[in-house]
Amino acid sequence: LPLFPLITKPTRMNVHSSTIIDNIFASGGKNRSGIVMTDISDHLPIFTVYKNDQTKNQPETDKPIRDMLGLKIKM
Image (cartoon, rainbow, N blue to C red; front, top):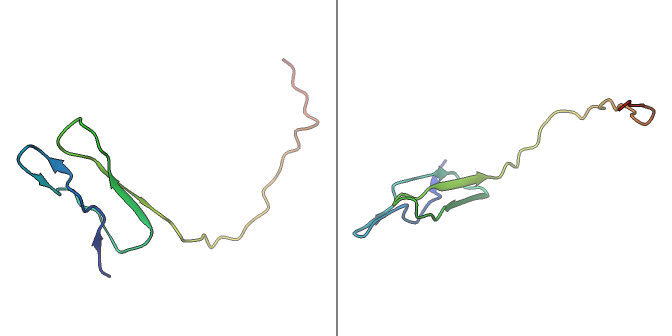
């Protein structure tokens, strides 16, 4: 199962250089990744959002419903 880098731009920058020091690797799929641009530090935060295509194999059950129309509440 090959892994591919999701972050391909520099995540640490200063006057003299810029490097990719943070890595996220995944085996494909529909992932959204990126770098959060901020001037708080020379090291930028990164993120990944994974899409979950799996379906649950649980059977649907009837959920009990409470009839609240006849309920009288004193205030």
